[in-house]
Length: 108
Length: 116
Image 1 (tube, one colour):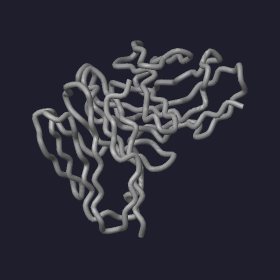
Image 2 (image 1 turned 90 degrees about the vertical axis):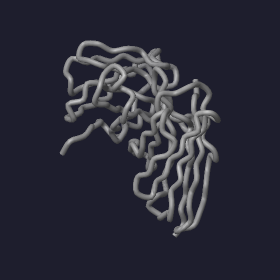
Image 3 (image 1 turned 45 degrees about the vertical axis):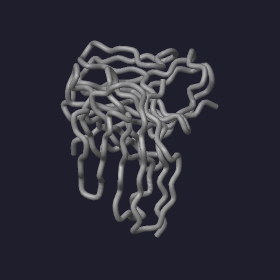
Image 4 (image 1 turned 90 degrees about the horizontal axis):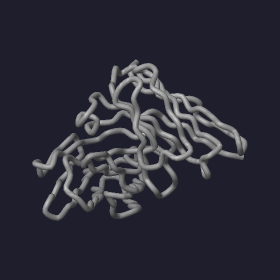
């Protein structure tokens, strides 16, 4: 069963623009994680935000969590062509469940 | 170099054959996982193991089997009972067991299985 759903499914932007991806989920969580996957490769962990946190930063990444709305967002600032990938949120309750992902294309 | 390796990268199988996918980690992680990824469906958990000689079924275990004889290794066998085995298979590990399983997971590069 799918817990997290990302929005949009696909996003195309120019280099230098910001990219925002959203994740909505259905039940209370312990933490929420964002992962990145380049085409045909394994996933790479980007950031983990716990249920008692509201915002975290890592380099050009900013993640917010709104537990009242059961949603999270991932912001990539000043995007680069190398950011082209699929981005997944994963919610943790008694298990870790991945969403279906947002495919980000950054054009040079 | 620490990390997770999966082999082979590409695998072709005839219908009715069993096939085993390899996953090895040298991160000294307790927990290991197998996921299946189909286009547009994200990752689904097949099996996981928190400790040597113990493993649990995930959401889609039917048609698959695993073993965990060594901490470093968690091979997955796709049996002929799996109705639609063509997919991208990802192995992962995490440092802790119990609630520590649900912190950061480290992924291998994946094996793409095609049934001919």
